Image 1: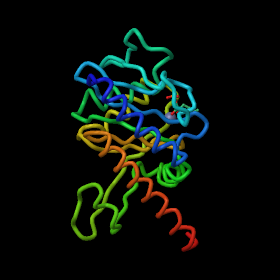
Image 2: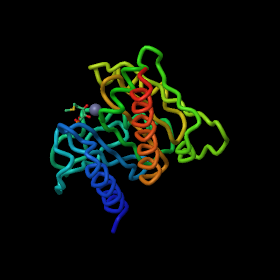
Image 3: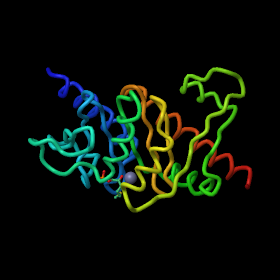
Length: 203
Ligand SMILES: CSCCC(=O)C(=O)COP(=O)(O)O
Ligand SMILES: [Zn+2]
């Protein structure tokens, strides 16, 4: 099996697991995985990502242009994945729309970021101190994708990270598929925990 096929299988596994969580409502969401310095696999645009087909992913070059031999169109948001691979050594980038990430993005959108403190799951990010904090930037949901990608890129420097797009979704990246999925799950846990606490406390 060549590298592209191995990475295809890795991304298909992640896609299946996120689909089982129902994190692809209404065809939303897009996923990518690096194949080498010149190319990555990205989900095809507009498809129901809960379905598994032979046309689920396309190979694109480092600028996000489709490489011949693959059916369909690359994700409309491929340029955000281009930012991740162009600016870091990350190996996988995951974008999902959930109710929880949308609610958090709207609640804290004016602040431009949201911070969580004193939650055990923060250890999933490799931060083991007591009372540790994790902060996620929140950017406006520009309809113009190159502009959205440019704004998103301002927060992309480390090999792992996350950016919330207001009333849209979250993009999380990591060194490989395992790490990106772990971080995505941890962020979604924090969002859900925070919203439930706010509701129960009546704030
Ligand atoms: C129906 S969701 C609108 C587009 C979007 O935000 C998304 O994540 C999916 O776009 P894609 O082109 O990757 O299918
Ligand atoms: Zn989206």
